[in-house]
Amino acid sequence: MTLFPVIDDLSRRFPEATNGASWELLSDRVMGGVSSGRLTLEPVAGRMAIHLTGDVSLENNGGFIQMALDLDPSGGSVDCRAYEGLEIEVSGNGESYGLHLRTADLGRPWQSYRQAFSAPPDWRTIRLPFTGFLPHRTEVAFAPGRIRRLGLVAIGRAFRADLALSAIRFF
Image (cartoon, rainbow, N blue to C red; front, side, top):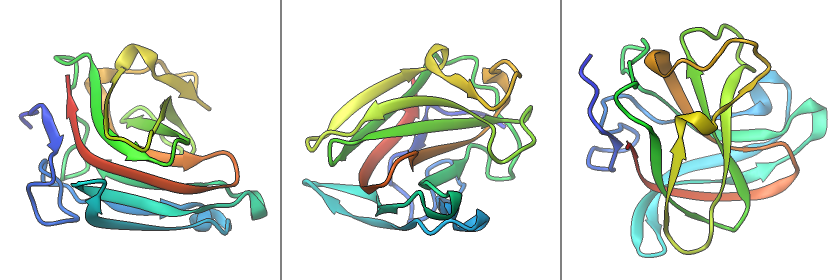
């Protein structure tokens, strides 16, 4: 698969991303948690955006909601070694969120490579270099040549999530 720098610029009909895959809303309910969320396409602070909102709860061993996207529409992995990382255009409620990556090397749903970012009320462009992604619940080294999926995640503490994304691309 040829990998283009733009992953999603909202040029296609939501939930389809520019790369041809579709955005999904996931929560801890898949494992018995009670967090709830919504994923919509709507204007946020003057821009069209994918808008993740909801309540993250730690009850029943829960604690996350996320917007997730495969990098390859067929679910395979893609070689991202030509790039240094990911660039996101976000706004939000000032809370900390995570960008999580999954590679073809990870077999368990709780395994990922993670990097935190803050989503301020005004729109910001944030660069997250691949060198800043830390392994979570895995000993496998991060392999940018085998990235399969990404997620923007509200996780780890009880709070009201409000995260808007207007674009995501490689840099």
